[in-house]
Image (tube, rainbow, N blue to C red; front, side, top):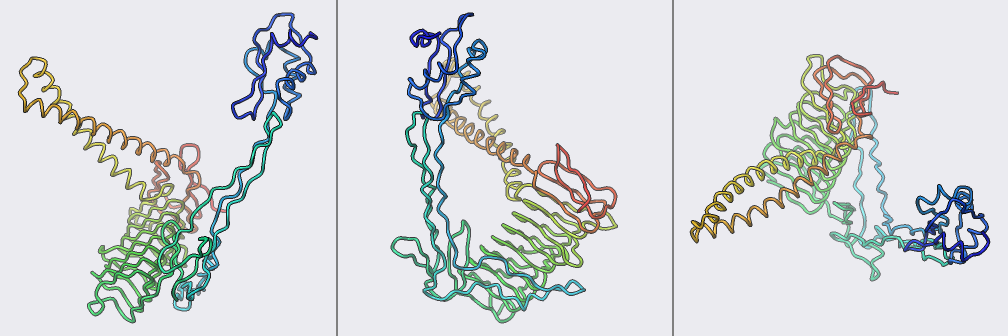
Length: 467
């Protein structure tokens, strides 16, 4: 077939809306139809396509027109533009975790010799913004340049006691203090509040906008709240500690099932007994966690010389690592990983909400049915009519709220399925009585096992040897 007019009666060339892809599709295909790859290329070029032509696609059409007549064939592809790098924050302060205390043969750690406070001076540069990149240009199939997409911009998140230059690209400390990142990477400089002794009736409760250092114990019944970090050079009894930053306790937590310790970032201590603790990131305990409720957004690490977890419940978004889990008496011990603890709690709350909303909706629908029957018989009074209208609005609102709750439940349940990176690692022994939960799957340990790890693989929790 040599005449272009005849060829165009069989074939049509089209471009995608973004002009990044070229297609050929058959308008008709006779049994004796034939065409060469060269003729197809001329047709494509006459249609305005000059870049990214795919010779193999043209040859496939020429070799077997009938097979290619069923659907359109991609015959050209453009070069997509590349997005530039996103804007980011470069901190002038060392944010690496330099907390690496020496551990002696007995497993004791000396926290007193380590100073992890990031001190800054007034006027010191603490962070600067790196502007987004422009990206790389591409070419569409018509040979036209496609502008590269600039990376996503961002605003520096400025908190307490810091100032920016006019361009808002540099952040400086406004006073002498400690550099602290709070939720969503907000930049702050907080002064430090020190208590030289116990938190007791002499000091009262503490609620401070910066970092709190307590050179003593926190006694039962008292509260310490800090927008920065909390450091206790002593122990914590049945008290309430809450920090937006990290919490470090040189001694341990002996709560007697009272109070709680809640950290927005990491939590470190030597032991937890009969306590309730939580951290947005890691919980690191050097000795033991006994009969306690522990929650960590990322990891729970109990890897000291003793490294024991027994009794209670330990939850972590990523991993739980310990030397020993449970004991020879088969004390019930629950270990849960694979989803952030707050999501598990949210799921429980949502299911309760679904139940109450469902019951309320059922009662509303039954009442509306009776009122509808009265209306149909013409026996409905004005007050019943007003009630009918009100119940109709209530039903609509409750149904909408119930749909929102169901959608959120499904979203959380889908996240429970993604537990491929979650794990429980035991470098010593895991004993019977231990319950391992990964995502939405559970495994009960009946017999002791040594140096094992637990992961979710192919629909079940598997136990393997640690390397």
